[in-house]
Image (cartoon, rainbow, N blue to C red; front, side, top):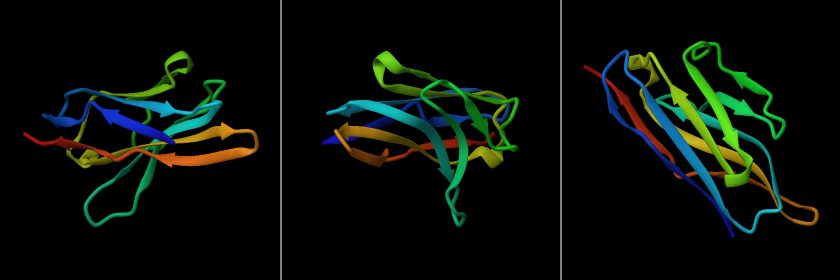
Length: 120
């Protein structure tokens, strides 16, 4: 069994910062792309940022220049540093990873989500 555990969400004022973490655990052979997605009330889940095993990154236009994704392969962990937060960043943030759990066995895995609220 493999799972992703997120942490670091919370309440922050506009202009503030938060750092999200997501650690993979269980039987893991290797991890491909890891990423963060978010879902605001009444909206569809959207991509925030992704990072490949080789550390190539991709960001949604709405977060470019404010958010930074990184990963520690030794710890099977991905991070999302969020700066200059805006009220429109309020959402549940989900971690995602493509994990090889055995020979020929690949699993698209989601975390349980962590709430980020940006308000005065």
